[in-house]
Image 1: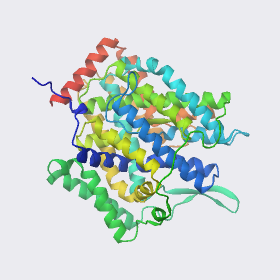
Image 2: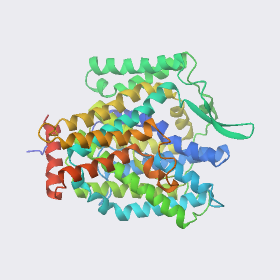
Image 3: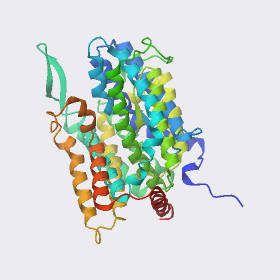
Image 4: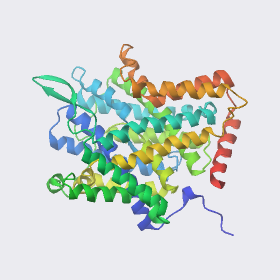
Length: 465
């Protein structure tokens, strides 16, 4: 009798794998290339070096995703995870690069050190599992979704409402004249309607790739009305090689290394929430050993980032939302996405085609996916006893409030020490810390065995429900 294969380990036919993997790539691409663009331009690198940063980033995205999804002994969570550069590192890296003569080589030295640090501390971070009962994980996952909605809404608006530029020698923020144009909003709405229609009336595979088909339909409409352009595609090379130490040998300075190690702690705590969310979505029981392997892969990905001229890596939460939307739980789908990212890193022209997708097109898809993450958090909270344990209400209420601070009041902590900003600028981390502390205060801390049983029960409920 053949043993039943868990949906996470299901190997789909390669045409389906490729299509579903491409869907994951399109969802994460804008976020994946944003950090090298921001850092490269802030450092005033020449265009060819910025282009190399993007190729290197895509290449390591693919490597890190394969490590995380397929797994190796002791490394990789073996869940449908897409890996990308974390936005939590942008501020610290720019600060490092503009301090004295440190520059980009000092950034890479600190990234390599942070990757090694992450590999070493992964077993200790995974021991935090008893601090994450459903009232905590549900709250964190809901805050992740709500926080991401700002990204999706700005995509639908065509970018950020303000742009940073230099006027009369002064660098400042100015209103973005292209933000929330009616044409762009119409395209985002069109994509959203197509996705919802395919979800309701599509069958089987069509319903699974509703997001991809919605993005393709949006691109077709954007091309017809002149919003999608292909000039950069024509200019891009067909093939490029990503080599380590492209800019020179990394340099190590104590303060930048400590700063990036702090960022790594933030990244790993956020990843802990992502892994628990994926375990719940896929019905896969996650124990401490799995968490250790997943967190260690974050460290390995960051180490590879420093070696291959890019930055710290983490699990991309927007792709967690896509798992919820499609219901496709196979980790081989994201592995296929990793292979595609590797290809994009080596084929600049293909990368330019994906980059040409307008943000307004992604905005319509983003509203669905990010909302699905928040809805997953709300679903987890339905299993929490609020009627007989009123303390749980306080845990959720206060933690969500903390998580919203960076979203609604970005300057709320501006007068606190600058060294704390990597911690205070992440709403997800603030919500996690608040939820963990409040739950421990009101409800106490369970044993590791109780925590693993609770996670396994939640996974079984998803698997059979």
